Image (cartoon, rainbow, N blue to C red; front, side, top):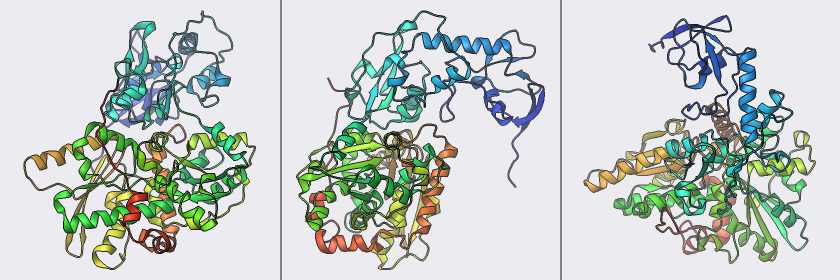
Length: 587
């Protein structure tokens, strides 16, 4: 029988409640449907009590305490809201605003800013304090992220997620007192730091201090250029998160509404990255089976779909490059096909194709020019990457009633997909999709049950052993870069000591939950939201006629008409890439 957790009884605003022992006052209040204001607290992160807004009173204490970092104790009597607490919190907000730019109308977080919302909720209508701004320039050195230190509220969220969750250490606090500000490590430019562009800093920032590089205007200009033939693709995780900005719940699958939306916006063809996820599996699963059978010393094979992880590998683990799958990510495969295969069939000049990827990820913006292989079509294979958030803004500016838009189909030639393609959006999905096809490659048969539930879920590192007709395949799945480091260190130790490798196949995703929790997804992600989005992904998987990549008839036709066979010379020219060691810091 499961062991019941010990509970304690406390009073919040004269109401008795029971909470698990070890619960913070902040979380206990939430369990009692009481919201305590905060700018620094985030459920993903360790509480640091930085902002001072979550103060509460405790009977018998002559001082207020910060509820996010104070554990509730048996018999505590807590007051979360009264006149004095209200006035103190309002003053804190006013003081923060005195060091914050008044450019809300021009800010990317306008109407989606936690400081702006708190100022409105507390009725801050004028400033009682003199304005004093830090004289620090924006950092626009990367193609993915922009840092605006003037807007930083010193909440510490970006530092916590970058250093202690991702273990990248690309940003830190520089200076002290009023002069303290967020900056890349060593006060370098972000592009010269260890930053891997995962965007978790921007996803956790409460204000506009770290945001993605906005390229909506570039796309709008392309859509209006009569000389161009604009096409778009949507990533697996976008279909279960985009609707949150409208009237849909997290996890609602709105794929066909997105197809219709992109056509109404002006794209002439709409593809689905799920199709090229199926293609990725054909390349990657064949690569794995070849290594497993003929070159086992080259194992483990590590997946290569996540560009933030690729950047991390090249900077932190260049000695592991030989273990990395050479298959490009799905959206890059789609990019090269959109400028080779598609124009050949449609008889369009490939120079006119303008490919836009709608991604849950900020690192994808970096990936499109990462190496020469990203120009395999003879052109830049992907012209622009928009995050889910950017497409939301673009949709609203276009005046489209997305809630009531009628569903449409994709352009099936590069849009038909299987369930294996769609589960790429969740941690464990790439591994599960690969195993479905690897089974077929090893046995010549299809699985009677394609669900590998051992590789699913939000546990940071998942391990499983798969029995394929007596052949044992050991796999690991890691999400969140901090967990990835642990997995790779175990592999390195095994190899150094000539021990058996712990796994044959490893899936890696830089963001917690995988792409459903990507750095370009709608704000406010929590594990509850990640779970709902993941559930939507697997619902989409189950609805598909085909659930294994090798069963996709359009993938079969692509190989027959254009690529030849998986891992062929042409496939390698178009669909594979190379890696190289990169320095952690650049001058």
